Length: 399
Image (cartoon, rainbow, N blue to C red; front, side):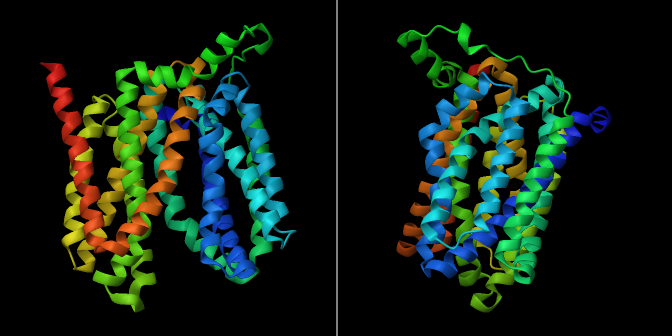
């Protein structure tokens, strides 16, 4: 761990993750507020998130293919500059159509941003340090989770939406500037040397999908990631309804939901640090066991009505969530050749991100049909079944 703290490349990267995370939370709050004021339509707030996910579905594989062939450091810097421009543009317009168009551009850039971020980490640290580095990254995400929305909400209320967008633009510019100090060796692929016949282009484009399909470990990781993302994306927004119905009513809903997410953030910090302790263990076994553990925690949370206990349980969910997220990233980076890591990450994100949005829709429909606690319990049983299935698969393979 001490070696990582002396790794200037990683420190720069983590500082960028922190600044970007705070800035993103700032724009999320400001943009939701601005769209609601301009249109007066709650659905348009949901559209803010949908428009940023749609391009990932369509462009994920192509974006990963391009990332594999470009200098990742320069690409990452360029994307932050574009994000700075779009954030600044948000402050200049009050036209809802223009705002949605900019959001679509952000979604296109995000389709490249995800595989680029995944591909950068193995260039910053040695393979044996990936677990520790991803654990630190998850802990930074936990800090952002605790501080980001609180800071954003206070700042937007004091300075308004437009200044918030300008501050976010400045944060992206600062990231682009500090990333110039990264000292990494990036082997670019000369596209001109690649074969240009149709079959070769097709194979190149589908390389990420083919690798996931043929590599049993990455295939298992992909399915686990898909199911976990689907469940978490469904449960997180329903936490507000859960608190309103079972943990204090409408009067205490905002306050107590804020406390729950803060404890989840603390858990995320601890989970990222905990991952370091297990860096030499079988990661697929750890991941599947943690799914079983998490499902039990969520079932207990669903049946509990004592708020202090709910805080502890939600914090435990944060620990497991960070643990799982760090393992998923580490296995993907360890087991995928660097030459196709962007394509593999791009393919996975092209499925995961839209599944997250679909989950939000299904969760909303289900909460109108059955009690919200049963939505949590059914999701937990799906997670439990997934964990038990892969645990059984693992032990059969060992025998």
